[in-house]
Image 1 (cartoon, rainbow, N blue to C red):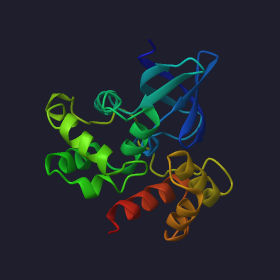
Image 2 (cartoon, one colour; image 1 turned 120 degrees about the horizontal axis):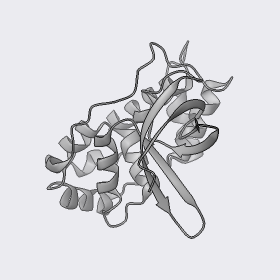
Image 3 (cartoon, helix red, strand yellow; image 1 turned 60 degrees about the vertical axis):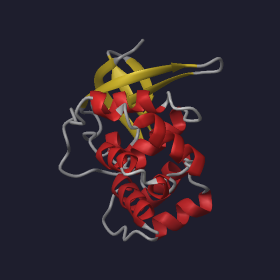
Amino acid sequence: MIGRLKGTLLLKSPPQLLLDVQGVGYEVEAPMSTFYQLPELNQEVVLHTHLIVRDDAHILCGFASEGERSLFRSLIRVNGVGAKLALAILSGMSATEFAQRVQENDVTGLTRLPGVGKKTAERLIIEMRDKLDALPAQGGSLPVSARVEAALADPLAEAVSALIALGYKPPEASRMVQRVDSTDLGSEAIIREALKSSISRK
């Protein structure tokens, strides 16, 4: 099991990043909550990781903190929640907000996340309620850059692509991005605002 990686950040293309660890390039999938804390390219970064082994692929997921990884591991134990959906949940709301919605039995709030229907939301509330108290604190361990820079030339296009990868349908992803005032914003900032807007809309 690969539990931790320390290396140079070579590429940020939400929800994927590329980390150079002593000459070996690791492709890592990460939630947006981790992307918001990444340093600029070619800087050193430490990620807490979880390796998923499937018949057709090995998928390495990376997180800014041990608490975030623990929440991910608890989520994928919930019936009907796979790695992709767990990453989408962590991308759509903070661990604190997720815990609050679970404790308040807020089914409606959880169903605003991509891929979470009413039945899945109800399962999350039932199965996660007792597990949240046992999770480590959600402190971040990555250095936060003063300003997040876009990894690609077109931050709007990258934001749409990232939202689609998180589970939103292309037309919905486009509408979410169009609602954001993207002036002078990088792709990660656009994604953050689009997700916040989507979760808060009734």
